[in-house]
Image 1 (cartoon, rainbow, N blue to C red):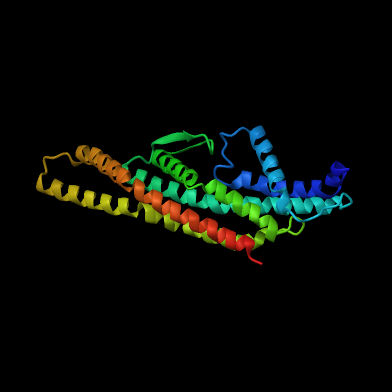
Image 2 (cartoon, helix red, strand yellow; image 1 turned 60 degrees about the horizontal axis):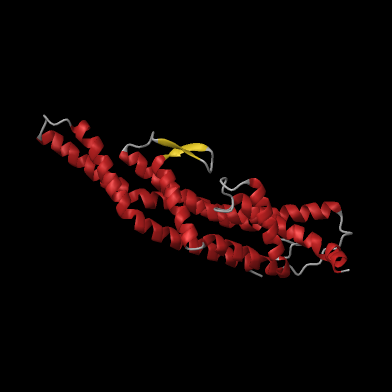
Length: 257
C-alpha cells in the first residue's frame, strides 16, 4: 500500500526534482566533470533526487497530462542548468586571467589537451583552471551549490518552477563580469611585463652590442613564473570570495518570494 501511494503521489514529484538536479550536473563545476563516467553521474543525481524528496512538498498525481509533465521537467532542468552556468562563469574568468599571463610570457602558442572540454587550451589558462577547481573543492563549493538547490525545492515548487528568464539577468551580469575579472587578474602581469619591455629597450640603447631578443625571452619567462607563483595565494583568496558571493547571490535569487 505504501508503495502504491508513493507511485501515485510522490514518484512524479521525484522525477521533477531529479530533472532540476540533472540540470546542475550538466552545467555546474565539479558535477559536470567529463572525467566522471556518464552512468555514475546518472546514478548519482537520481540518488540525490531521492535524498531531497522530503523537501518537495508538491503532490503530483499520475493523471497529470503528458504535455504538462514534460513542460515542468524541462523548466526544472533549465533552472539547474542556469545555476550551473552562473557558477561556472567564475572559472572561465580565472582561466582567462591565466591566458593573459601566458600571452605576456610568450606562451600563447603553448597548448595542452583539456580532458574537460576535450579541446586544446593554453597551458597557464589550464593551470589557473585547475587552481580554481582546487579552491572550489577546498571551500566545499559543490556542497554549497547542492544546498542552494535543495533549499530551492521549498521556495520554488517543482510543479511551478521559476522561469529560466528570471535567472537570465544574473547570467548576463556574470558574463559581463567575466572579461573584467579576467583582465583584473591579469593586469599586474601586463603592467610588469610592460616595465620589463621598457627596461630592455633602454638597455638595448645603452648597450647596443647586447642581443636583447635572446635575453628578453628567458627573462620574461622567469619573471612571469615568479609572478605567477607569488600571485597564486592572492588568486585563491580572490576566487574564493567571488565564488562565495556568487553562491550567496544565487541563493537570494532562488529563495526570493
